[in-house]
Length: 250
Image 1: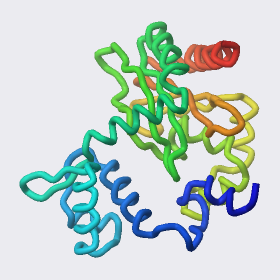
Image 2: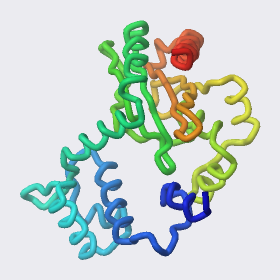
Image 3: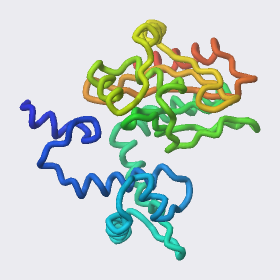
């Protein structure tokens, strides 16, 4: 495989963009990411500040996304993602084998614990929840599919950092991500899990373990979150490790 081939297979956000990439396409994808980071329709002025771009250029990009069916516009000129994103996300889970292979695992954990297990991945420089089974408890962790969390301060994020390659850690550091000391990450690898109490959200604790889907796939994390007052660290970690062990054996 040539260096050029490797560049083609590496996400653009993680390498210095080659000159042959279409910058206009990358900017439209940045707009989609910005729309995905909001939980309600957003005005052009707000998006322009977040992206640090001119409103006129952003307006053209949004019109393009609306025409292509990726975004919708409200009567008061606010923008939000269309339901096409839901379809693409569902297909991505199926193509990666997450839906068929991991959903039964999550459902079993949720049944046994009453809590909410989730699958997450590294998304540029955040943790992204890509699959989750909801808790049946009245008081529960309010973390939905699509939620982004910081790498430092979440159990899933610490696992992703602990198992990241030196090159990936260097790339994250260049983008301003605070990388924990090497001995902290080594301890997580030695134990095979990470735990955060009152980390991402006050009153919420979680444990996470890695799932390696194969040499050519990205690392996933399996995590379980619960209100801190009923979070049983040992039982949660034991259940997660056992679930991953059975997943590998299947």
